[in-house]
Image (tube, rainbow, N blue to C red; front, top):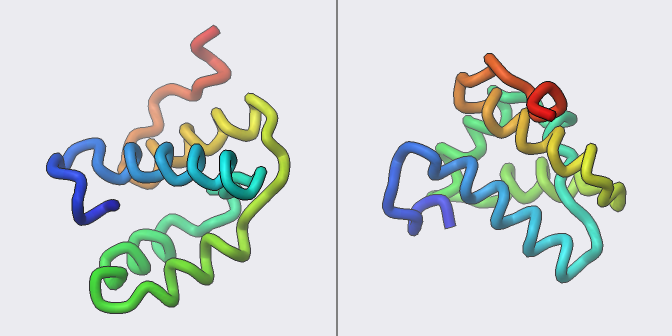
Length: 94
């Protein structure tokens, strides 16, 4: 999905939201993005067109059945952090 999405800006965030929604619907789980180190994740993403094993390992070992709003929005915060944005947190935008 990350390669297929045609826009560079927002590509990773869109992919992570899509993946969480897919996993929620199919498995009743989402990724606990806050448990995945930024550099490990970004390096796994860079290598994923050649080999998906590292990325699969990171994702499979960080699935959670905590489907609360707080957990989902924490994932969005981390998604922005991965891409260098950390001015706002969703919990502050109430």
